[in-house]
Image 1 (cartoon, helix red, strand yellow):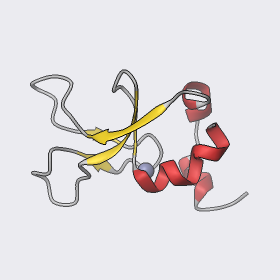
Image 2 (cartoon, rainbow, N blue to C red; image 1 turned 180 degrees about the vertical axis):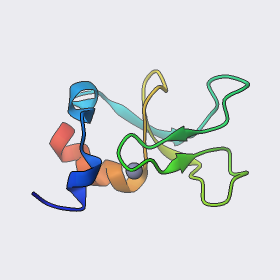
Image 3 (cartoon, rainbow, N blue to C red; image 1 turned 60 degrees about the vertical axis):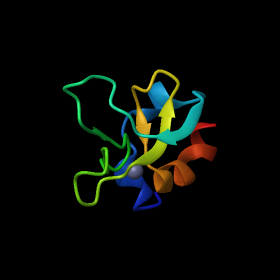
Image 4 (cartoon, rainbow, N blue to C red; image 1 turned 30 degrees about the horizontal axis):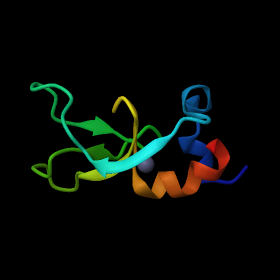
Length: 80
Ligand SMILES: [Zn+2]
């Protein structure tokens, strides 16, 4: 087991294996929605208003799941 990768891996395999992720700016899917979290490490995505929040990452085509850049780099070979 390769920590610290291990703690971030839960059941993402079920829904992220083989899906295509696109790098893009984070956007709000709804007017009352102001942030998302990385599926692996819970890093926060937002519009840049919150200190420390990420404004760019990888998302599924429907914009539902977001993955931060470091986690994408760690996991993309594993999830294809
Ligand atoms: Zn992450």
